[in-house]
Length: 75
Image (cartoon, rainbow, N blue to C red):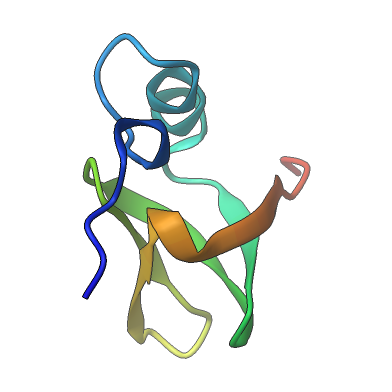
């Protein structure tokens, strides 16, 4: 198991922390090597994101595994 480096964490004061705080509750798509996950950003932690999918499943995505992410426009 690898330990995430500081650059792979969502810590207070970081750009990622500000971004996730601003978009909490919005729909987002996260791409990893295992595939894409889409859901509402319900929570985040220094090491992972919590998304709730349209089928009401909770998905956890390790921050260090994220290749890219996008937030969907608000309606």
